[in-house]
Amino acid sequence: MPHTSSPATASWLHQAIARIEADYQRSADTHLIPLPLPAFAAAGIDLYLKDESTHPTGSLKHRLARSLFLYALCNGWVREGSTIVEASSGSTAVSEAYFARLLGLPFVAVMPRSTSAEKIALIEFYGGRCHFVESAGEVYDAARAVALETGGHYMDQFTYAERATDWRGNNNIAESMFTQMQRERHPVPRWIVVGAGTGGTSATIGRYVRYQRHATQICVADPAGSVFAAYHRTGDATLTAPGSRIEGIGRPRVEPSFIRTLVDRMEEVQDPDSIAAMRALSALLGRRVGPSTGTNFVAMLALAQEMRTRGEQGSILSLLCDAGERYLPTYHDEDWVRRCLGDCADAGERLQGRMA
Ligand SMILES: *Cc1c(COP(=O)(O)O)cnc(C)c1O
Image 1: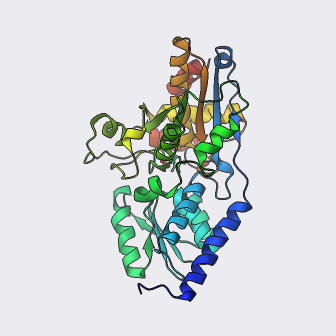
Image 2 (image 1 turned 60 degrees about the vertical axis):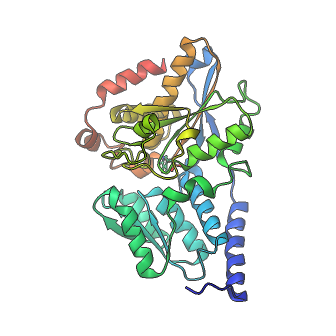
């Protein structure tokens, strides 16, 4: 690749950035939905979910993909014709395929073979190509190799997610949440709960609340099999784990974008509890949510319970990361759940008790 900038390169670059900015200008913000939970409302505790499923590509990864493209373009890492390569468990690849198509760039997603057929279909819909590996741990090296072969650019969400987004504000997800809370009875959240895949969302929100000097604390809901909870306890970045069974969150290795010092608390969540919470929340909202939103809801209820016990009032915010429609044959299918994650009946009863 030549390391000089010609006027033609600059002109393509300017047009590419302008296209992403125009796409952003056409977009609306996502809703903040209050959860109807009378038992907590009576105790002065309000729960909300920011609905990230309504982005054009259906998940909070739409924000990340936009940030990663702008960061790569401004760094001079992507030029006209560059193949974009990403290691992904699915959602990031769907969103990056959308932006690659917007810029007329080829896109290759490197994913575990277990990735849901719905996500694969979406990546291909946006003109992307899927390159499969057998296990989640192989995606990084395979993505680097594909980038080398194609002379393309490995986007590397797991490294750059924490730095590609403007954490001080500039309409990031945290600033949007605080603005949307302004007319609520507890406008400054006591807790914000997020899952961690890259760790980018927890890093952006964590930095924002400190910079703005809010009293809000950050809780990461970590699924069974993920390494993040043990890393948060020990600080040992060489730790590994078997890997999570909740798509989108929980990782087998400590990702560089997971910034431990920005997280005040970890809540470890068992898979049957995530599934039970996903189902209960879907019933409560009248629409299906994805499994990682269930994991978030379990942690929200644990924090709400604690606040009530201590006689503390306030609000708890989290994210509706993606909709359940992507998971109809998997997490929303009873047989699949029983086969892959086990029986969730007890967890369902426990959860009903926690919502009361
Ligand atoms: C990526 C993802 C998350 C976690 O977000 P990060 O910013 O990557 O930590 C949560 N839920 C879903 C469905 C995701 O795809």
